[in-house]
Length: 570
Image (tube, rainbow, N blue to C red; front, side, top):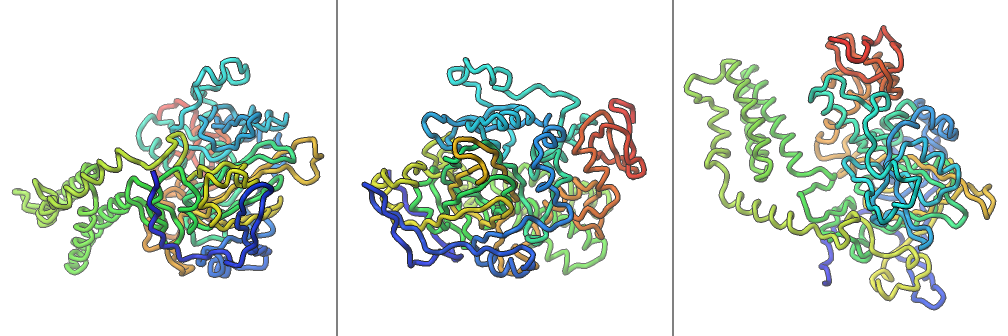
């Protein structure tokens, strides 16, 4: 079935229309642009200049040199396999696999396999080019298909997630309560194994993109020969700062405006002005935030502002907050009304404790909320529309291959490279590809939803018939929606989420107004990082309030926190 093209609102950079035609033997032509990304010495440009030239215009750029931040130590430390094994070797990771005999690319939809990081590193050292460490996902199932690997001795112990080892856990919930678990989840959204054990080797937020809000960091690693291994053609949902630590990367990229020409696995609905591609499912904003999540955030903030306004006797501020509250309640769809009700009840209960509600429950706030939230207070037309939308989203997510993300292309790598099967993808002939390399010691800035197929190679010094390691580290940032350096987003939604995560990692309360998240200037930072990077047998807690900081091998940094033996009564 022919899919309708997505609504294309992209206003960012598109490579020059003057392009060269790349003709392949026995096949049609591909359009390869004559444009190449700028190569800029990172020491020669400020963060504001970089934002204005490249981030705001949605233009890819290669930065020569690695991060100048004092916290950046990965270049020196991660070149040592022994260091990675010692510090992160016990972390459990999910590893992509491929059929090398068929020349298969990674990202082919195969289920990943579980193994410890030290075992993966050993296989990379041995030249196993069929394994690839990439982004880690929560709750992803390991491969348990017996037909695929029942005779593979190496995989017998790792086809399913390994049992918990109390000495190897990343970010252990020591109290057995919900609070620590929620904190662990928040941090894992930004940093998953094995990087949780390498936190002391990189800045949480690099200075070159200091006004963009971080989303996640990833480690990309494997072995390759001089033929290279491919990632498959796809796009990310975030701005990307990609740091090549070992080997060389060959990029084939296409602008977001080519979405309809690249035969995506998912049914793209819209390309936002900043390039972000939207698919069927929950409603999303151009900065990648789910509309419902933003509504809940607005609801929580509105309730807080109402409380503060009543304490201050500021009627105008209270009325303004009430408008925000009503809009947030209206936006929340049926599946999120339970959460909205919890927030509302929490407000009312607190309000009564403050003496603002009377015995009959005729509180002004309760009445105004109930006008939108009682029986049946929801707008019936709005409710019907939302329910209908939910049914459609649940029954159709637009993917052709349900084993792959919607953001992957159905075009095989061989077609991209040789063009011999291009007749099966006729629109590809109209797309604008750009091909370039990023060398070891360089970084690539790639705005959200720029399509890319990456070929990974060992360093140029590797003999032709031999293999070598390729490794990269990257930051994902929520895509900006404004062109102002100081305020690149429409609101503070993402920054509020980031502050909570960064303060947790740095070991401080997120209500400390004089603390800059990720700055690592707080005296608890070192203790928190050490304990989280080296899990062991001691619980580290802050002196004030006993806040959980992590697990340490020994009772170190006592002046920063309280060390107690695991299992000891508190």
